[in-house]
Image (tube, rainbow, N blue to C red):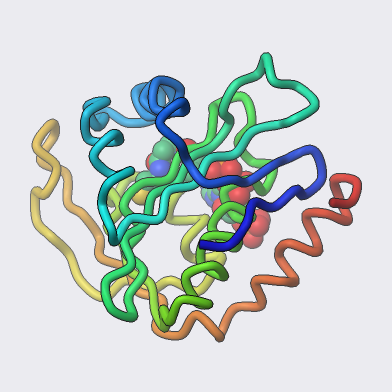
Length: 177
Ligand SMILES: CC(C)(COP(=O)(O)OP(=O)(O)OC[C@H]1O[C@@H](n2cnc3c(N)ncnc32)[C@H](O)[C@@H]1OP(=O)(O)O)[C@@H](O)C(=O)NCCC(=O)NCCS
């Protein structure tokens, strides 16, 4: 796993067991079908999982403002979950978090990335489309709470995105790092 990254006011670092309560809180605020705390604990032992969190070292009282889990399966990076605290959305944080995590697994041999997203999740669709993910299929009625469809999205070639440019732009706009 790549080391942590300090970028602007943010620090992106591997998730630890001390983060689990906060990650669970963030997840509950962000999803209508949140994962149980136990699921996050299990991910820390999952050999395929790469789990990251975002915080602000200068403002520890804020707690975690983002989290991401992906599963590296051979050469595929499956985005399992990503969330940014409501008060910090639309500032490019999900994009830098994904950039750092995907650059990291690219170093480990990942070639492509894939995910599932609710059809109505315009923020997430905006995020993924801005990175070049495109729809490859649909799972009808996939989500158990409202029977909403899941869209399956792929990014075929991780090298088709200039991840460093995304990080560079964020750091220019938010004061170095
Ligand atoms: C989806 C989510 C992680 C995005 O986090 P974020 O930090 O606000 O996203 P960013 O600011 O990095 O935005 C990245 C891109 O997505 C687009 N985007 C973000 N929010 C958007 C919105 N509400 N509507 C349309 N596009 C949006 C932005 O235009 C941006 O593209 P750009 O850089 O080309 O302008 C956040 O909204 C969230 O936590 N949602 C709840 C949990 C969730 O749905 N996770 C995804 C599950 S698949």
